[in-house]
Structure formats: C-alpha cells, structure tokens
Length: 157
View 1 (cartoon, rainbow, N blue to C red):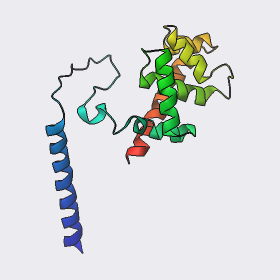
View 2: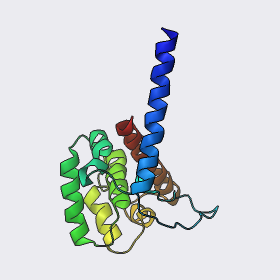
View 3: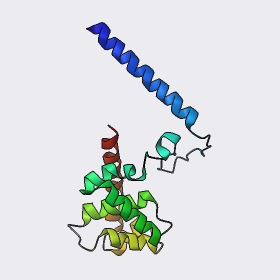
View 4: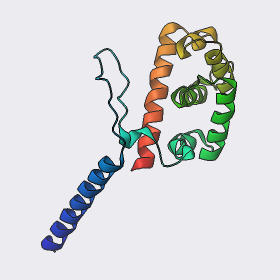
C-alpha cells in the first residue's frame, strides 16, 4: 500500500513538473519590472496573466456575488464600453464593495462606484463621495480585495 501511494505521489509530481515546463515553453518571453517595496500589486506572470476564457476570470467572484460568470462578463464589457480605462480589477472591486456595503449604505451601488471611477476618481475617493470616511473607504477597499482573492482561490482548488 505504501509503495502504491509513493508511486502515485511521484507520478503526480512528475506530471506537475512536466506541465510547468510545458507552460514555460509555450509562454511568450516577457520581461517584467521588479516590484518596489512600496507597491502592493503582484507582478504578472504568464501563468496568471490570462485565464482560459474571459468568463473564467469571474467564476469565483460570481459565486460570491450570487450571479453567473457570464453575467459578470457581460456587465464588465458594458462598463468597459462606458469607461475604456476600467480594469477588471476595478470592476471586481466595485462589485465586491457594493456587495459588502450596499445593505448598510444604499447609496453605495456598483453603478455609483463605476460612475465615480469613470469620472476619474479613485475607488477611495468615490467611496468618500458616497458618504464613507477615508478610514472606512480604505477598509472597504482592503476587504473587497481580500474577498476577491479568496473567491478566486476557491475556484482554483
């Protein structure tokens, strides 16, 4: 029994290493700038740069928000047409913040946040314009980021 489980673990590791090597060969050579210590964003790597399909990106978030990935993808595309500078991350943050705070503060809606972003304000500035203190806006942004990250990790497990 122990030999079989050791064999299975060994084969699994070999397959993982082989897939990793294959992904490296297929990934285009890109050069990324090293991160500064003050920047909290993660560097993009070829393995995290592009999900399998556009709606796959929204899979975990959609489950957290109680909708479908396709509905979120469609909403993102519509919002992107209205604001070409809108990133998926900002779109997800707007939805997560509205989901987290909308019941306590009815002025905080996804559309209100997206409108603020479209006018050139940051997420924090938009939330402050909707009635939150600077401290509460920062906390809401951090919580939305944590929730989105957790939702994404649940779909990859």
